[in-house]
Image (cartoon, rainbow, N blue to C red):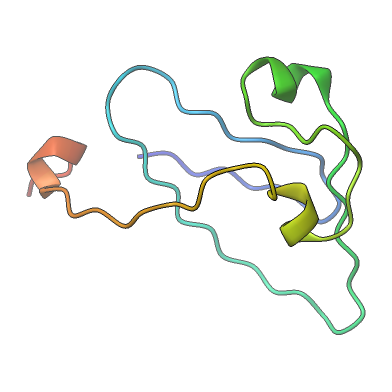
Length: 82
């Protein structure tokens, strides 16, 4: 398990490595009037994780991607057995 902190307005993208499952838990708070920008990044695009055109809306930014599907995976497959 790893901890990553991205300060406000830090450009970032998370890309899974390997063939196993990847789980990311994100927490944050946005104040009223907070603006989000999805910038174009050639590096992110090379990994299939970037937007084609700068966007300020999550719906526009992810319009071309399939909806995620919830799945149940046993803790042992995630390497988190107790």
